[in-house]
Image (cartoon, rainbow, N blue to C red; front, side):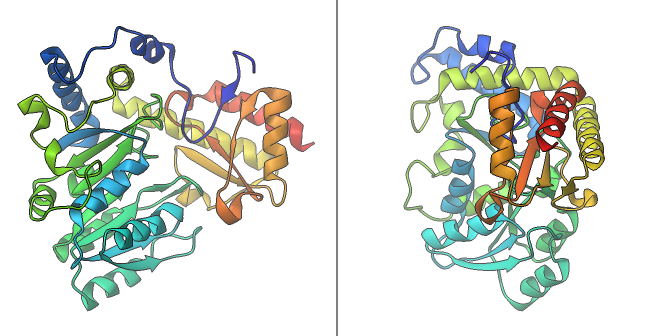
Length: 355
């Protein structure tokens, strides 16, 4: 494996040198050193600029931890949850709900189509729901969902909303001000190593979380509300990962969110222009495609093309998941990799492989 291997995957993404260097600093004891708690509080304040003004909690665990923790902390056995889905992770919320004893009602749309607003409204009008879950960017398909009208319907019916924004937060605008629990992760648009989940939690969500005892320990969000102020963590935190995440957050904020979003849009546009030149079709149409990931249809060849790109061009891409594994190839232009020169190198190599 060469040092200049280009990993254009939709997470984990390339980690900048500043982040790697910060992680190499001496490791503090996060349980007993007051300075570490001050550092953690400062990090959560920085994250408010990206995540919104709600309380910020950073958990020690990959992004899926956030999805499970939100369900474990918000859903009790008597609760009905509307799981709004047009992809793998949207449907996966239903599995978590059932795991924790809730009643999951899945409102499902085809994977390459938008969320069905009429069906969502019908579900909300026909039954009382406590929580609704949804995904902003479905990473396996590159679909970016328009959440504003869905959030409006949920607000009209006083339903707590949980949004998986793992693959969009920090790469494109997310309506965090209208969401009760917004879930992000370190390894996507932040371009830090995998290992951390970020949650922003509204007062309404905290009230629900504190209204019952969950059966979980590691996924229980309740102890985190006052943990940093009380200078203790429910478990030993991942100090080196947090240092790297802090450096990654600084890089994002120094560049400025508007410029970061523009850079992602520019990289996505160029990727799709090059794909069109190669005669490749997008899995969802362009209007639904996320600025952070492009899914290309290569029926029956995705795995072999992926392998040839890695073996002959030192470029790593991801295939689709599940039934799409052989038919979809995904280019992750997110975080540090949302740059035109990296997209050009990737698409040049893809064109060579497809000849």
